[in-house]
Image (tube, rainbow over all chains, first blue to last red; front, side):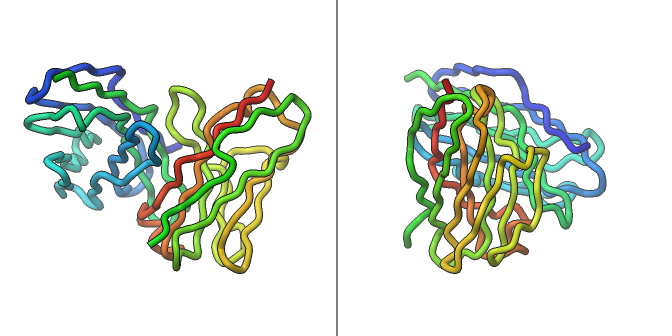
Length: 112
Length: 116
């Protein structure tokens, strides 16, 4: 079946550091890929998405590129802020499916 | 624009009891999905409702059931509660079924259920 694997957390960084959160997937067909973010006390929010190979999703300084050859969708940000502290989920959906398949989440803490 | 609202935010039940969780979808959204998020895990799909009909179901037993009402709000019912049902239950709405399939979901903050 379809699955998503994220790098183990938690991740702790200093402000202005470079961030990478790894995500790899297994899926039949050609899935769309997503990063969702869950800030403390809030619901899950869509951060960015990519729908086909080599697409780059970007939002709020975060980027991720859909790499079909390595089945990966790693999240990156050049300079993190304290306000980026949250739990990040990588997810996929396959064409015609009703459900998002999520990874286990990575908790990110940014220290000033 | 009102977002997705869920109630109650927290509740405690004992094993064997039944629970009903409620969700008001975002204005204009006709598709509602429910997910279970166990502690430290990613959300897992329970089922989806589109225009009052179940439109897909994940790997959950029949004691997990749902409803969608004409105003597109929704309920999740769980019978014969088990300890493993302790989790955050998330409701997500989409403008329509097609956008749900594109992953364009708007999530509520969830209902945290503890089963003792």
